[in-house]
Image (cartoon, rainbow, N blue to C red):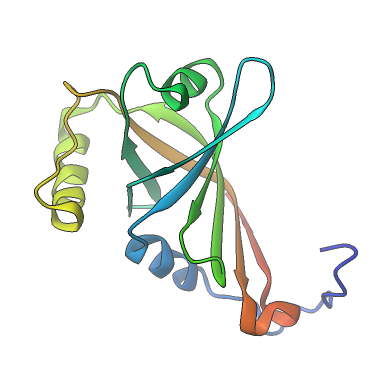
Length: 148
């Protein structure tokens, strides 16, 4: 992390399961997408982390859905900034019925009575390309980047 005074050593880096735990337990998330004019669009969403992907739903005509259909690159952040996990990834609409069913079980457990319902709008999965983990208490030694 050039300019932050973070040592180049790998000592103290966060384990991947640290990031996954925070992604699984976060109730609210932030999604950042890109509007057609190139400006950012950020909104809170609900979602689940399961099997190495992030899954959420939205209205078909929502700005974030329209943005993702035009440009699938996005950023997902958990709600707890002092233990931040920032997922840079590529979104795609989930159409596989078996995968949807499995992810819906996880989603319903977390947000009951809400379900992932494609009739209400698209279900997206986000595959990470790069993930950053930043733990405020140990920032100088624990700021971590994972590449996929």
